[in-house]
Image 1: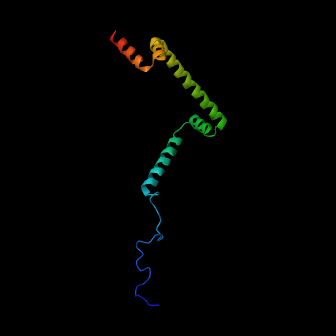
Image 2: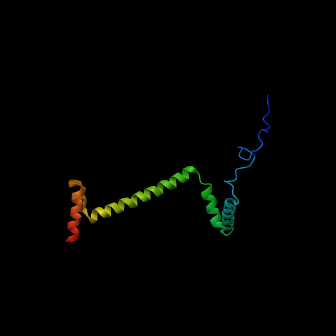
Image 3: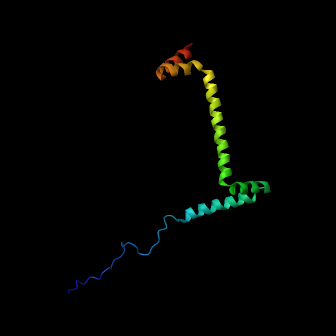
Length: 118
């Protein structure tokens, strides 16, 4: 076996896995931002009254069933509000809705144009 005079792996500058760590996700700037956010949250919590702290802790420890019940009430309230607005719009322009059901959208546009020039 003849030797060529080259040493194997003499230049490993472009070798994969040289032992350096990937610090792209843990840059000092990103860590500083997270730490600053934590510090602001701590200061905000210290400045809260006892009632506010109790309310925050109650919300944090609220059960899933209770949270689902509250969300259901909120959804129902939003739906009621939308229905009231739709009813108001229907009462405001009943002929437009009747025309839309009877003939389609293009005639409704023409009807609205006629009403705007009257």
